[in-house]
Length: 344
Image 1 (cartoon, rainbow, N blue to C red):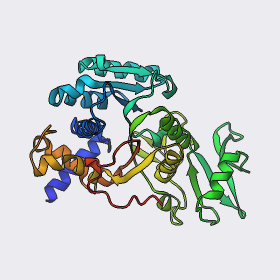
Image 2 (tube, one colour):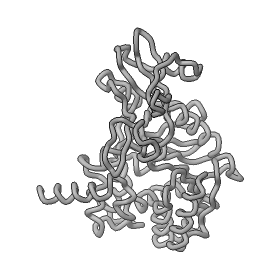
Image 3 (tube, helix red, strand yellow):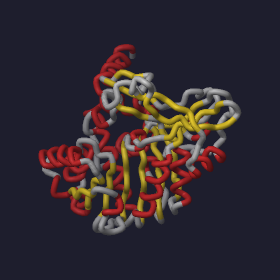
Image 4 (cartoon, one colour):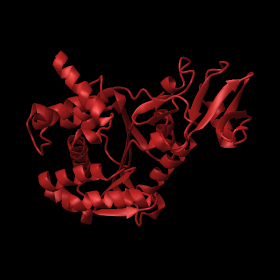
């Protein structure tokens, strides 16, 4: 058991906690869940799989390759859309999908509004929301203020605290259960709320799957979380002061999943469940484990990857999955082991 744990730690260290980097199993499991969604929706033609935040396109390749191999009738129905505004990212994605011989199934759009029809299918993202810009607020001298970025006398970036001027931000701060504790600092992601509203307005019928690291509001804004979640990473090492060396490291913040769920509900989506990655993937794979029924993702041949994706000390509880839907049934395999949403 100790050897297994050591091996898992080494795998996670090598892949830097990225589910896609574990290998193709993560994409295969998502594809199997998407296949069930297609069946629940009575096999629409086309069935849209819309991905935003596709990075280098490897996850799209893993999903499409499994569909082509295991369920060709589903593969033929798929219209895979990647929403990407970066030319460099598009170039990388096209190289990946061309190498995997699935590029003919993929269409690129520079923004959600560019989709030329209201899709029926599934809209999903994996580690997209944590990269969206956030607003930082702090409680000082008996009131909430915003932490902004300025230039100091040495022409370096520095924090500056000022009154909150944005009316939307004011309303959200007033509505959240934020601890009125001197020095308490946290993040509000207005862009994530806007993004979820855009997704809800675009999808005609189907599912929205959001995978990322984060918490419900009750934990995100808990009194013990005095410094928030905003942080930076360089060479896979955490950077405490994110304003140093601008452009040389990634800046990220955890996701407030309650805000996403509530925004989606206001825009016409129904929240089906909020579950950690371990239980979600176990639900998707249950039939293969218990019944041996297909289509198969071949977990037995990928045991190391399965352990890394689902072990609670590794990726299994690091990532959370929010499932929402518009005008569809709720009986998804991935929600078999879900309890109460815990989003309140």
